[in-house]
Amino acid sequence: MKKELLEVFDNQFPDRDYTIEIVNPEFTSVCPKTGLPDFGTITLRYVPDKVCIELKSLKYYYLEFRNAGIFYENITNTILDHMISALHPRTLTVTTEWKARGGITETVTASYSSADKA
Image (cartoon, rainbow, N blue to C red; front, side, top):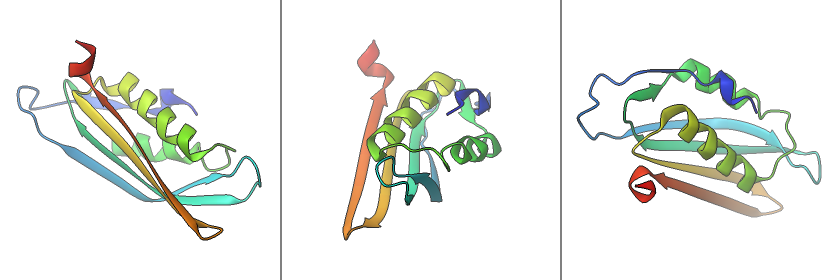
């Protein structure tokens, strides 16, 4: 996945803590074991610092996963790592909720806090 696709813009309120939530209910990837498509919802929830994510670039970034054979856990943590690199947010949580496959659903959550790094 090309993290270079992610673009940002200046946060107009860097002195204020506020939460941005972005939901993509049409995320797709491919199961690396079966080659079958996986369908899920990706939710990003973050408190920005100096920059915010530009949504069109995020859309194209997500499309990079469409034909990738990758496990749910890897998707969630890869998105978290790439978003941290692009945004340097105060906090960030990535939640992926996957449609049933074989009657089983899965939700994966990965989080980051800049306070933990201080």
